Length: 235
Image (cartoon, rainbow, N blue to C red; front, top):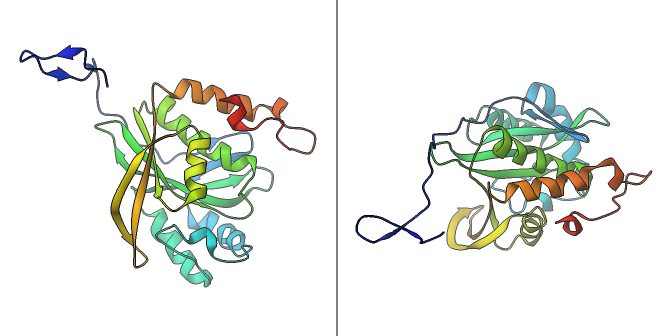
């Protein structure tokens, strides 16, 4: 933060935010993309698909760094989906594969702070049908686009267990900046977690948005749907 401004006491202060006001709370509405659509989580429409999608996993490793799961009992999984759908914060979204019309994962906006224009993406729970597909990247982009372009937030956060190497790599691949480690920040599943913090700011978003749009362009995929250039190559 620039220290060029000072107050009447000669103390450095941050940039002025002329006309700033609280941002809207994220709405419960769908977001349409090219590969997927995000919909407010609704167990009546999404639970069957999500339970079936996660049953295709060979084991429970996708749940290791989440505060919930793994779910071997479909009824327990459905009960969690019911609870998640009723929440306002986190605000959970189902990821719909447009090719099949089925829900293949979920992610949420959480720690929603309209007064300061800050929100976090979390509870990223992607089934084997979604992992390592263009949908997984587009789903993240669609939520970012809502936060910055539609709602006008200033800061978008990503936090994860510091030992979760894939999540940390994904955050950096998506354009987040690593900010540090909060030691012994969380207790979950009977263990201690150091939390890695990442952020993306509104001033950085236009360049990141252009990166995503170049990557998602039909020209970047061959006839078999394989990417021609990696997202990191377009940064």
